[in-house]
Length: 362
Image (cartoon, rainbow, N blue to C red; front, side):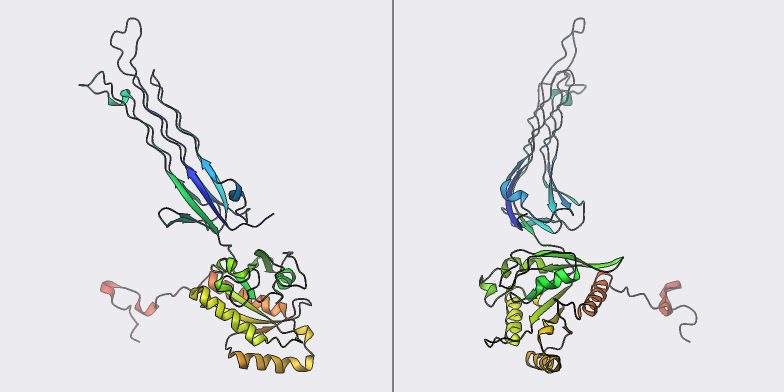
């Protein structure tokens, strides 16, 4: 299925039905009185988060969504029927923005969350509504109210705990395939990944986290070079970024430190908030580095990059070093999901008048 993470659609709620002016006309009932019913309400448009969807492809081709109008009121005390609402199912993480107002209407973050994006118009009043003790034969009615119409921008930001960063061919797709059940396309040429891939990493039967792999970044991505800048938004909801660096020996003089600095610079240009997220360095393809040179290369890389954060040495192809990385990531993600709650000091539990409890001075 083609991956689409942006779409623009038009939604229109239904108009309310008009009220009716009618009087009861029956034999032997000379003063039947008014019996015109109210109009029915127009259908509304709702957006619902669906965890089974992962793309906005449905809204790339179906751009107009209209609810039906409510029925008009009729005589014999008959109210018009309300129109059915329509429900638009969208993947989790979708941001719904009103283009005309420039305001975010909702972010679908909870499965089954239902958000009203266009309210249907209320039905008009029939003359039965205006009957009073002093106005026994009203001839007033009101038209139905119009439904809301909006032009919406849908933007999908995938919900993942961990995001993978790196140059093209750094081994991101190989890593996500090695540690999860995801099966992205893997090849020995740049830009193999053309859209984000999600993988669930299971540490234990009830311990897991979600990893997002985006297309590789290149220098100048913030200005539009390459593909990765289109998908950096998908990393903005992650708790941790894993920066993969290709440590395989190069014959053409490519410097892994220069590549790492380029990625860091692009993050800072694109979004300072994304640059400030916790980020770990993962040195990949260590199986291609001679065993006697690994420690020296790693030490030289850290020194030249002036990196003070966590560093992991792995080989995504052979899974060497992947298990310690997975466990460390899960520990960090668990701490971010469930931050510790600061409990009040029991010595200062409030008693009468807010004074410390007995024995607090001892």
